[in-house]
Image 1: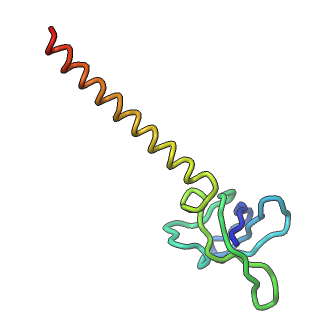
Image 2 (image 1 turned 135 degrees about the vertical axis):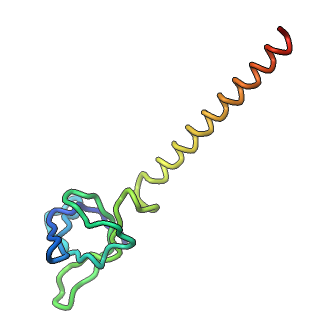
Length: 109
């Protein structure tokens, strides 16, 4: 199961931090290695999706962490994609309609 929260503590020197889950104050440990395909370091207040596991002592830790903006399964990302596709379709429609209008006017002018 995937969860969502924000990076609320991060130490670049130690390469770990904590996520505060949405709707909870319990911190979840996160190590830099838990981030999938991460080109840069996490920053404070980034919204992330993650899976939960337990460390050897039984404390919660995050795994398979992705930024919400990078996560294709994130809530809202497919909606934004559909809106972008619809907007592109409308733009192409108006370009085609304008071109046909110009052709029609030249033929009758």
